[in-house]
Length: 170
Image (cartoon, rainbow, N blue to C red; front, side, top):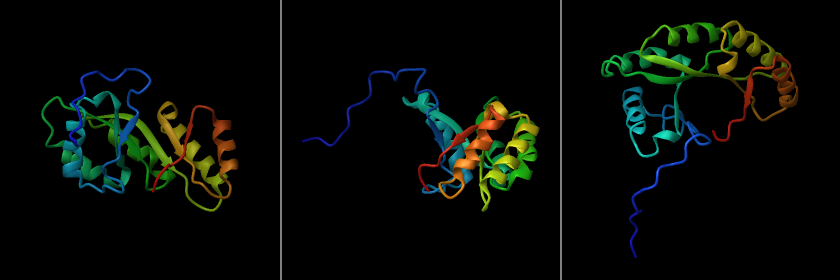
């Protein structure tokens, strides 16, 4: 009995599954160092499953390390980035501006986790910050499972263009 998996010979269907899996190498359980995560992401983009690979998730608190890792990229190489704003709603515009101003990076999404006791109030602040940063079409607001999540979703629905995201791990 062989334990070797057969080689994939059929290409994956395009469209529905395109970009399905974001690259969260920097987050638990992997917690990869930036200097390993960025080259790893680029290798994923060259594999048979490349169609499934979504943007590279980068916390706003690690944008300096991302810029340093991007210095090692081959000329003409760019990274599709989903910015995870882990430094509060007030940091949305600064993080978005930093990613947009770097020609090696392409902003593909902005994720903003809600925190605090009053999720509806935090959701409102998040919506305003994301709207002001002009990323409505790229924005995902991560609503935690806990008291007040329904009211937070109501606030998001009232703003329209934003999407809610439910974390499935961690």
